Image (tube, rainbow, N blue to C red; front, side, top):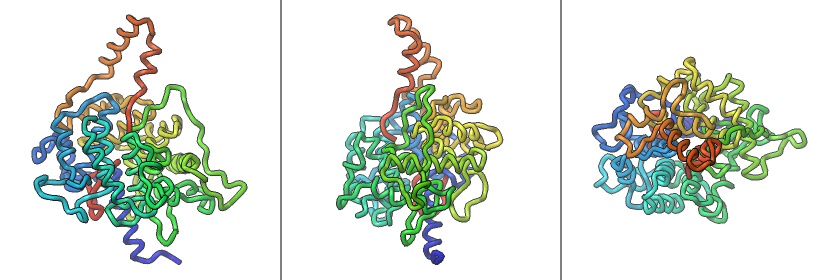
Length: 424
């Protein structure tokens, strides 16, 4: 039986909100100007922060941390100041003197992203702990999370929350257990198995409608990180490494499903790689009613997930498309801190150089959307300093290369009211 109109409406609204979180909705003209918002000192970007302020700030911190940049204290203070008294975060809190409405103002995705961002900058341990406590207090009985307290579990919110615990150095499968169920177990229930169409096997559904599942690219990319216990900040691939893809094998059982998180991660990577290849290196929107055109945000999500799985060649293909002039990515990301951050995180994880992305310096562009960073060492400057130390210490350049590509801790996108189309 076909899903009811109500189910379609719920799915469409949820998918639209997810698109806003992960950066696929169209950016308003206000975002063309990359200077910081005068209405919110410390905030990155000039676009209306009503729905995405916390999320874009959090992603910016993660991208800067990946590149060895320390955000301005005023920017960190702004994000920390958005936290509500109970530990949750809103999409944006215009008046921090006004108490939050827990039922209306606080969101799982914004809270989980903020935890990841604050964990990356360091020195905000109490805010991170309160954020994690909020997540545990609002965890659903199945072990997962919906976009707000009391909302049905969805794959995206659950995935971002998993990343928050990972960013804080905790094992989500142990640190967040509700009724004997953990979030990773809950997430596996959203994955399509061998019973699905061949080109959808291994994908994740955003929601469950009477236990039916529908392949969703946004959910799949998010789950690709969470099933590996990772957030948005992923250590870069080592030079020369490339793990082979292992799509879900249905040759012996047409009803088989991934048996654990590791198998689920490999299966979804196989799905993402296949979906990218079908389009020539990019993904199309999964959201019902979305324009049938390439989705740069979700394509970057997929590249990040594939890099997290160690699949250098598979991750490189969507990044090559994103770097091309034909993709329109440069204009898509211009002046938008959330989008720039996503490109930086994906490129960094795949072992590339975000300072030379199709001839553009993404790091410089991101820094320009907010207060001047406390520290923003250039790649060339760091390299010269390290080469001098290597020469003096006798270790050689190879030692620098090995050390330079080891980084990061922990790891999300434009959280919103989930009821309206937002910035990214």
